[in-house]
Amino acid sequence: MKVSDILRVKGGTLYTVSPDEKLSHAIETMAEFDIGSLAVMENGQLVGMLTFREVIKTLASNAGTVAGKTVDKVMDRSPSTCTPETELEQVRPLMLESHTRYMPVMDGKMLMGVISFYDVAKAIVDNQNFENKMLKAYIREWPEQEVDEKS
Image 1 (cartoon, rainbow, N blue to C red):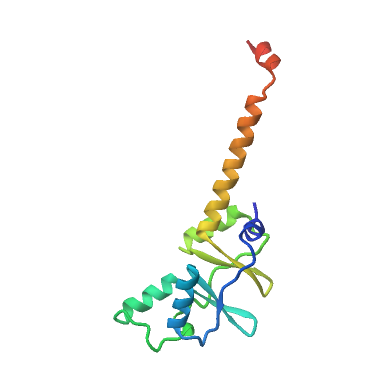
Image 2 (cartoon, rainbow, N blue to C red):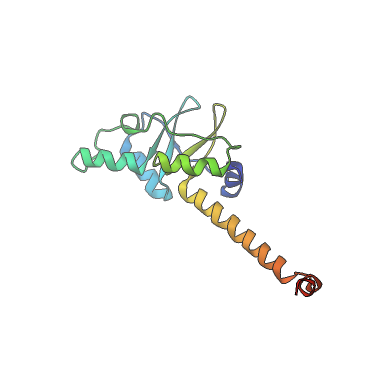
């Protein structure tokens, strides 16, 4: 299974923010749309990611306030990325090793989407459930003569 399979199911909605945006406004956007990350874009290029992790770190180091902060001051400037052709077996360990919950999907310099750890886990579980269903159907249809011959 490839990352492109997740993007196809997930749809094309992509939430972005500019680096000079007020952090408070970015947080409001994340809360409004119930999302955990924003791709930070400048001149059509991905320049970073803003996730709950950066927001929480900022709150912790600033006595619970984000007043006066802009996205570029707190964003992750070098997020781990993958391509649409990356296999999920490659994405899982990368996300685990780097503690990444959100990963931009890049096709060259073009941002194709963002996948979350939840998206990856759901795709794997859905795929396993489908395989289990197919195996159970296959076993139910097992030819009886082969069973008799082995007895």
